[in-house]
Length: 445
Ligand code: GAP
Image (spheres, rainbow, N blue to C red):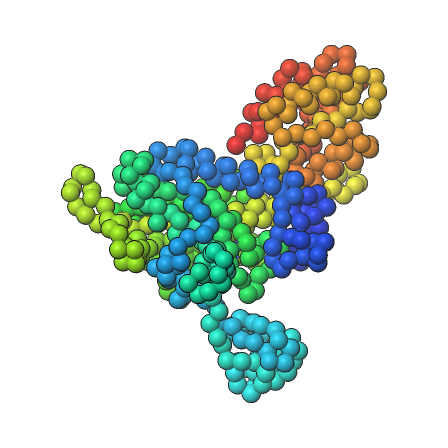
């Protein structure tokens, strides 16, 4: 592996060069910590989301899907605690106008006091005392920009699930325990964003809220944290790069009784990319109180009434995509030449195979086109007839394409092709009739 300090630089440059991730509004100088997914990145992220959806919603009888709107009634965010509590303490430098989190380790001294020194311009005594800053993006609904018209871009998708909990329960005829899963955008006006797509201001979450009877919550919490770790390992992420981190009392969010982060060892350290939270009945009780609508559950078996507890699994789609990219990145020497290879799990790989006519004559392009047309009815595949075969392989190694299918001189004689494996570099020769099923066995999600 290359040294850790420049892996992120190399990844950012590969991501741009190959069309995984671009900076938002780049031609205007970019928009801070907002990113766009290019042709390869959109496929990778879509594959992750689809796999998550399948494992949560389709593979289980006890979880339903939902797609709630980003804009919600502003009272939702009062009930959830976000208006009062989703804040970071910030200090401003009155001299250079930069803004920092009050706990920024670069600040020497106590903000607000004469001894404090600005970490950017170096002035002393110019830092204000900390002020609380809410991380929610605000906008106005309707034509009038007044306090009564304020709405927020949701900072988590979870609340859309809580406010629809009764709708889903009644329309799906589920019984507790059951869950609701949702994938969607969330927005946070982060003060210290960074590390590429790790902490951004617009991102996507894959969240599942599992509603359980109070008293069974710790059991379900344990169940879900192990399920989530298993899912990540099955995604091909190296297990030694994954670990749990249990929240200390100080780290617990206002709604949580117990919480584990799943962390990955990024080049910039161990960091959370998914959380499993025991949110108790905090959210449903608060929505009951603020909306005046009853949200309790009548257990048909025991005739007991209770407000369900919620066990939440909350993953960032972008952070999970970043984990898969970082984890896949490899550099090695092959036959005296350096190759960069993205060892993405075949089910996640944006392109499943690339088809190459060895040369552009002798019937090879015609046969290669036929193989390509067969394949693209089933998979996202790529046709490349430009440059030497070695260069074409290397381009696909960088894109993470697990298989390279080459049509050579023998192919036109006996209708066989070679299939090169991205990771082992082994080549096998198979009949063109078998190419679709050969790939199917190896790339299924
Ligand atoms: N509903 C619970 C919740 O939102 P969180 O720990 O604040 O919990 C869950 O966020 C996940 O969402 C994180 O583990 C991360 O993957 C993703 N996430 C949160 N803030 C993010 C940001 N600014 N940029 C990218 N992903 C973020």
